[in-house]
Amino acid sequence: MARTKREVQEPTRRSERLQGAKAATKAKEEMNAKVTKAKRFRRPRQRKTCRLLALPGELRNKIWRYTLVEPVKINVTTTGPGDPAVIRTCKSVRNEARAIYYRENDFRLHVRNYNGAAFLPFFYQYARWPKVTRSQVFFSMTGLPNWDNLVAWLKSSDTSVGTVPDLDNPKSSIEHIVGGAMRIVDAMKYLPWQYKEEALQGFYQGLKGTCSRWVKDEDRLGMHG
Image (tube, rainbow, N blue to C red; front, side, top):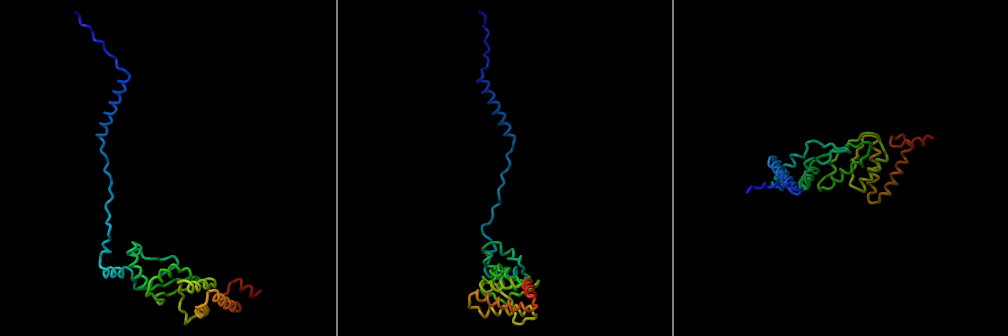
């Protein structure tokens, strides 16, 4: 009996899709096996404690003094220098080192046009620490006399923490007037500021009849009109 030829079964659409999916999966697996994954970057661990703060307090104070205390006066302007960088390190260092910085240094304030009230940020920091004295603050005056700036400066020293120079021994006509204005405020120190301001205004009215450089230009022109 003759053999019958087996009929070849043609693939269906479903089998074609399955074979294609298997081939794609196999190709993807082979590709992933060849590609090496990049190593994940890990941030180095930071120490939670500062070794400097672990030192004894006496030794830390010696370090602060060596770092912060200057042999000469520290120059201060309305723009700086502010607290040194080491004081801004962290809260613990700031609490320890800032007291030494303000207590044990002398400061020279460069005041322009008698705008001493512009130094209030410095005075606020300076006045926070006990045992600081006015003798540690020196003033260098530059620019022109300005009555409004002087009154604002006197007000800051009277109602806030501002400090004014010691002019018990004035050396010029300008310093005589500044010293006189300061003595008016000091003599009325127990009165509200409004009374002192009225007294200063009366003092200024007396200057209008003079050639003082403290008189404002509009008042000077009015005097000659």
